[in-house]
Length: 179
Image (cartoon, rainbow, N blue to C red; front, side):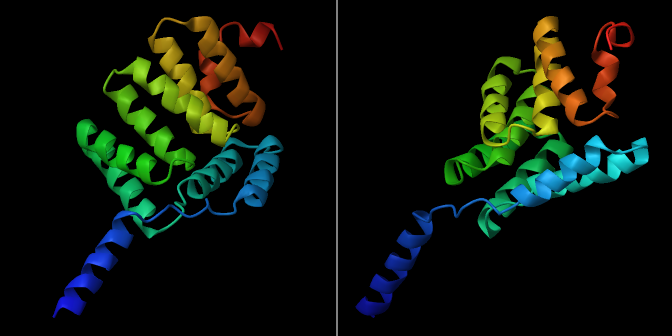
């Protein structure tokens, strides 16, 4: 009986101290998607590619990370932004090198009007995935919400450089006159 109890304690300890595995190897697929996006001729074609990018970005490193991400995203859709931030903070604590955890927490913070806290999460997302369209757009929208139009425009132009069909182009002032 003591052996079984000791074994259970050891298993529970190993689960509690589990480390997040490496991020999924998606670099090659991301590069292809960004190339396809750059050369898309129609907005519908660009939408298919951005859907693929989101599928790649939301591939968590393992089952536990995926569970936390899915739970956090579900809480966002349900409008429970506090619970979403808690789930996503747990994900970040478990997988500190997984960009989407930061991006989704930034989104929850943005929706909660906590713009100042959203910006560091967006910066961390972009440090991990520099071409993350959602984080670039989110950073632009956050700067816009803070009244920082010039900083917002920089981010929106980065998105436009990656995605010629981005809806963010409507947020760039004088775009038609400076191309």
